[in-house]
Image (cartoon, rainbow over the protein chains, first blue to last red):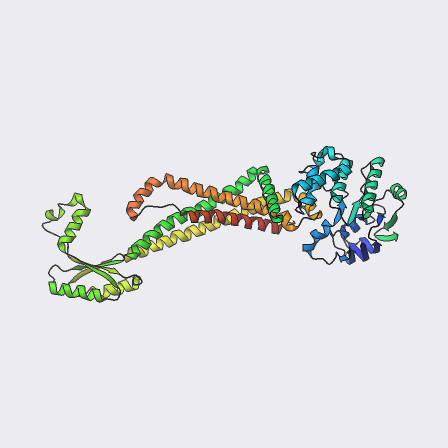
Length: 218
Length: 297
C-alpha cells in the first residue's frame, strides 16, 4: 500500500527531517511507526498524503506515485486516505456532526445520508450523544475521537493516525485501538505513528522505528 | 445534482459569512453601490443628451434667407437647383407672410411687434432638409458654399454647429462618466478583494483543514467567489434603486429640461439596469478571484 524509496526531507540546510527512508507497508497491514519526538514520524505521514513533497525520493500509495501526481489530483488522493491529525484539525465553527459529515459533503453525498453515516461514525467512538456540540466544548480526548470518526467515515483504503491516543486515558486508548483493528479487519491498511511503547507491545503488530529521520528497525 | 449541491453549499456558506461580518461587508456593498451609481448617473445624462443629438441630427436643416426684391423666376430657379442637389431631401419655401404667421404663433406676447416696427420684418426663406447620410459637417458646409452667393440669397444659416457642440458635450459627459465610474469601479474591486482577503485570513485554518480532508480548490474557494458576487449584486441593486430615487427627486427639474430638449427625460432602460447589476456581480467575482489568487488557499 505504501512504498517509500530513498526518501529525503530537508526543511533547512543544517538538518534533515528524513534521510534515505526506504520502507514498505503491505495492503491490509496494521503497522506502527515509532521513534522519539522529532524522529520524523509526522513528516513521513505528511509526505504520504501529500501535504508536503519530499526533497528527494519517491513515495507510492496504492501504486500511485504521490510525489508526481498533479495538484488537481491531490484531493482525490486525500479522500482515499483517512488521517487522524495530532492537533485534530476540527472546524471550530461547525458542530462535531458537521465536522464528521464534511468529508461526505465534499463528495456530494445526499444530506440525509451524510447525517446517518456521521451519526454512526460518532456512535462508534462513543460521542453520538454530543453530536450538536462544537469542538471547543469537548475535552482533548473527545476531540481526538471526533477526528478518528471523521477519518473513518469514508471507509478509506489507508488510515494514517498521528499519536491518536496521546490525549486518551488507557481504557479509551484501548477502545480506539480496537476500533482501528476492526477497520483493519475490513481491509483498510492502518499506519499509526506513536511513541507509546506499552501500546505497541500490547498490540503485537509490526513496528517501523525512526531515529533522526532514518529507519533503524522494521 | 452534484453541481447543484455544491452551489447550495456555496450560497449557504457565503450568506452565513456575509451575515457574520456584516459591518465590513456593508462597506464593500456601499463602495460598489456608490461606484455604480456614479456610472449610472452619467449614463442617464449621456443617453438622454445622445437621444436629443440623434433627433436633431436626423433633421439637419439649412435655411437660405432671400432678398426681398428677388424675382419669382430667380426664386423658382433656386428652388429647382436645390431640389436637384444630391444631399437635399426636401425643400420648403417660406414666404414673408408665412414667416410672420409662424412668429405670431410662437410668440403670443409679441404679436404686435411687427406693426410696432412698421411692417413685416421677416424675409422669405428656403428651408432645406438634408438626406440621411449627407448630414456630415463637410457636406452641409459644401451645400452652404454652393448656394450662399447664388442670386437672390441674402444669408445662409445652419444649426449644425450647435449639434457639433452638443455632440462634443455628450462625448465629454460619457468620457467623464466612464473615467470617474471606471476609477470608482476599480475602487469597488479593490474593496471587495480586500474584504474577502480579510475573511480568507480569518478562516485560513478552516480552509487548510478542508484541503487536508480532500476538498478541491474549487470547493474551498467557491463560497468566497459567491460572497463577492452577492456583494457586487447587492451594490448593483442598491445603485439602481438610488438612481431611481434621484431620478424621481429631480423629476420636476427634468420636466423643465424636457421642454428644452423637446422630449421627455427618461430613466435608464430596464436592460441597462440589469447590465448594471450584472456588472456589479462581475466586479465582485473579479475582486474575489484577485484576493484568492493572492492568498494561499
